[in-house]
Figure 1 (tube, rainbow, N blue to C red):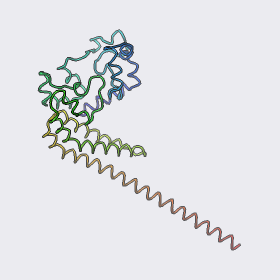
Figure 2 (cartoon, rainbow, N blue to C red):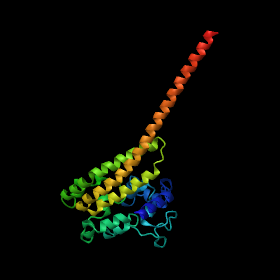
Figure 3 (cartoon, rainbow, N blue to C red):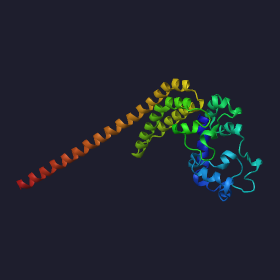
Figure 4 (cartoon, rainbow, N blue to C red):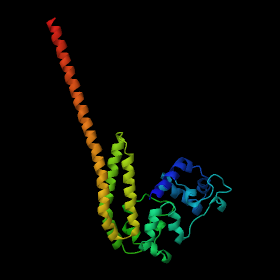
Length: 261
């Protein structure tokens, strides 16, 4: 998981959204119609684009030169075959690849079992969420019954993750350094969502308690910060009140002094 996070971080730094717009891949395909141009519009709506992951990060090649953009000597590998997709995506999503490979989906790959793009799409990849598990998508291949059990098993933890994320956003908004806690939450979310790919209800249910403990520790840290903020507000309010009282006393003393004169 750490290797995955580092990979995404490096790609995000090296290929920010501004730089991604300048690649020859986007310039060339963006000006074409039909099958060759469609991926660009789809990619622009993706979580990859939002994080600066562009064409060459997945397909290889030289993104700075039209002549060598699709040169195998420059690392161009093009689009993978159906059964190659998990390994293709797994170059970055290492932990997910491991869990997928041992799952019912992964074991059925050579028989047409679902792989990454079946559920996530290829170019319009959206941010992972519990909403990806739905009857319309899952019933394309099989009944929704088991998928519904999977969704139910992870639902409450997903709610807890979102609530903690919202609280951290609020703390960051008022100037609190939340980087450390956000990192803990990010790691917990990634570890938890790896479970999605096992398609194993029993494993998910068994792991829920462990994640609940991890999230409880994060919530405790957030609450400590909130308590400190409340104390600061209380102290600040008390200081203001004392200043007001002191000012009033000073005015009374001054008034009394002038009356005596």
